[in-house]
Image 1 (cartoon, rainbow, N blue to C red):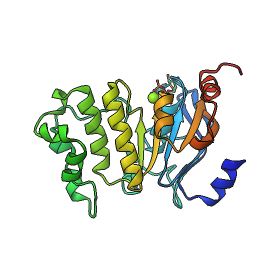
Image 2 (image 1 turned 90 degrees about the horizontal axis):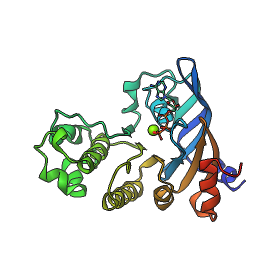
Image 3 (image 1 turned 120 degrees about the vertical axis):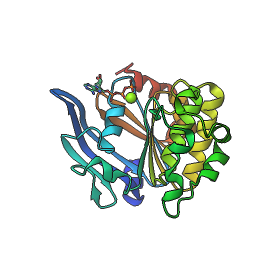
Image 4 (image 1 turned 60 degrees about the vertical axis):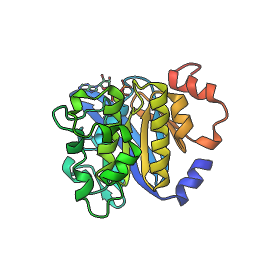
Length: 244
Ligand SMILES: Nc1ncnc2c1ncn2[C@@H]1O[C@H](COP(=O)(O)OP(=O)(O)OP(=O)(O)O)[C@@H](O)[C@H]1O
Ligand SMILES: [Mg+2]
């Protein structure tokens, strides 16, 4: 109830309504509904294979939805070609980083200077990621996994997004780097970005999110404000499918 009351007054950066997606005959998203509030971090938590990446890819136009709507302001993304997403302020940090192996760090950040009024200049990004500055002439394939993760985040920020989708940005990272990602998320949230974070790591999600949404079998089954969560064990059991 508390969430519904808040939802009526808050501004949503992204409104996902009854979204369905299929891979061939396999029905993967079964009517996802979720409001992503502006200037906050919303975490989607869920087990392997529940459809988290499919949802993110549907928002980005990489997977075409087979039903529903996805609003950014008054614009429904459904049916729009994938390439218009950047102009609407959307950017993605994809699962598994997916940096361009044969491009240098500098080349990944070439948008940082060409987007007018962009606060995420190359200098700013290098301030946030000093290791990338040290390696600015290196080809992405020669970077460590952690450096590639930072580059994927910097690349997305260089497009000056209003809404940042981050698909498991801490996957495979050492604890110090997980902590660095947490600080980056808080910094950009405080700069006004709306963030949709996909996480399998519940502890990480709880450490950074303002709102937590649990996904199971292609649907959002629970949404809680972070401040209202007092029983983490029950939340974990819900995610893992225990005590149902
Ligand atoms: N390109 C594809 N073609 C067919 N099936 C797919 C494809 N991509 C994903 N799937 C299937 O769709 C379901 C949802 O996958 P998805 O990658 O969205 O899950 P996820 O929640 O992101 O999982 P993970 O936590 O492992 O990243 C899974 O059953 C998966 O096997
Ligand atoms: Mg995934």
